[in-house]
Length: 353
Image (cartoon, rainbow, N blue to C red; front, side):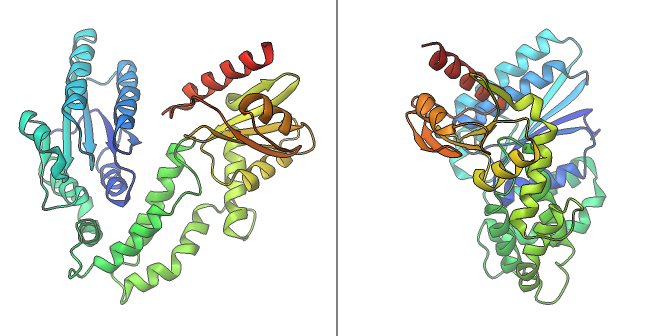
């Protein structure tokens, strides 16, 4: 089968989901990724993809969904959006393919031809076999043992040889919250790909699962090395994220009365990261981080009394340089632009009252 001009790949947020994307990243050249948990987030992520497709000049597009079971209404939404896009953009052909192994998607699989369901294999194994069968992608064969290890842990084949190796890697991916996909999606995924690729280098060694467990801390540190010398993982992550935040500073800026701040969304470890960023950026008075549940954390470096901001925005409080609270009525959003629009509107309402 001819490879599509452009691929949009939505997958789950665990090892099985990211491994599917790791494989497609090595098979297709022009590919965009997103990850989702189950429920309403799937629809939110799909909407982002369809907006991007509207601007895509490619003629042959593949929408690939892996390791996620979709409801009948979500499947219907996909077909409606594709129909609209193909009627709006003449000459475009959008193919959809879902590869999953969760039995709860049986109703959808029976109704939609593009919904492939096989409960006997992990999504990674399904994706691996599908890529080889349909697109060749012979370069993927070097990852066969990795695929089998992920398959063993994901569907719990504990007697399989790669089970323990897969278990170590699954735990590493599950606990990987250093970057945070809400704000730095590409970098967060790159971090997970780095762990999978680094694990691949150990998979043929004796006691590979023990060596992977022993080396995972160093594997993580290697990803966050910014060239400033060795340091603790926390400090390396702080420097890495400070660089990312500084590069996007203008996009993240918000104003609160006479103060200039930056708004972040679901940023991990706001105390360490926030302080490092503010030290490196003395032109910024405060940093405001909002979590998906509406909780906020504010930090300053003696340039703003963030306890006043926390009190006014969220009925919170704390210290002049470290405060928090919770915004009532906040609903989880799936793009930073939506979050920023919500917070800016809230600031306008509170400061004009």
